[in-house]
Length: 459
Image (cartoon, rainbow, N blue to C red; front, side, top):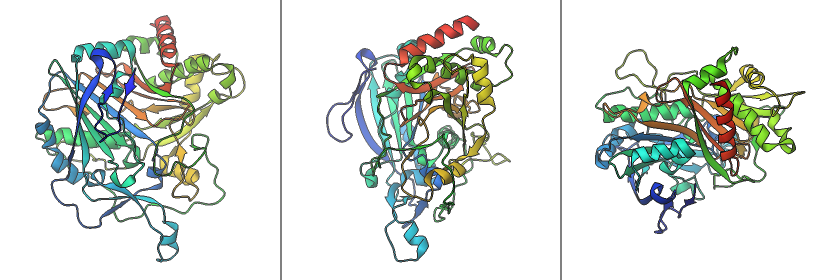
């Protein structure tokens, strides 16, 4: 996919895609909370949040019908009252004379809840929704153009934590694309947040999320003897205030659909989850593509589990828990030791390894990875080849607008290291799977062909 982009605010034309699939005519505006949050309200970031500061979530929802931009913005005012930290801007604690605790916090990022708002991006596409979906199914990776491609920095003071892109198709359909700074919350937190907005749009009244005390510092002392897990790696050099993962390769989006019938073929004789089977199939294919020069590196993969808590807030009170803004997912790693290598091993063997992964809470991983440094730069997604289990998310039902259900949904992570990363979640019917990945340029078509061939053999 050809990508040409101008820096936001430069006044230059911005075009993403090619030909009739191009997304263009960008217009930016801002929505702020409906009421003033307060004066000097700071939202302290936990270690688990800062562990993910270089990463971003991309969530795209394509609809056959469209709504007026004004209609979409209207429920955002009460929504941002509920989720006020995402309207804020990042700051760093300054050196102070307030004792050891204040000195230790110097330089640590936090969110100043100053109601600067979230950025709304209006765009247009010359294709119909059906044409877009046909190309997405054929080529994959198209959905990235439907979520604004922007990272935090180099000026923290002016960087929004959330972009909402509204793309109009020529047939009257639309796409909603969210670009979410991962340090604000993990995939379930983001999904619950977007779902709350959809509920408000549809006239429902979900309960307010349970947010951390914005004034409560969440850093913790870390023993000097902790070992950094293989699932996390430090960047080669500090990134400063431009929060982007440095990579040696050009990383590109990739997506693939695995049908229910293909999953049944994979599951024959295997006592593991569909996530592990799909991840193992992808692990094996990429190991073959990357070849013997990277055999050792491909023996270790990272696993992120996001599906151990509910994400859709209840419509009314009740006993359901409405998630706030947290990074509470779990992180682990699998290692294919001995012989054979992942390029030679069968999918069932690799899936069994993934099923046995020991997982730690993101907070525990952060304590080890940051080692007491409040400004460390580390990579989770793509430090190794990374697989994210999002099978438990209701990504279609979670963002219904009135009676309208999305025709296509894709959740992916951006800001990915050279190892690449793949999110696995349910498809529109709930029985198949969507693989939304980021891989190195030159790998996408080879990976698509390898997965297609492998699935044809089991279907």
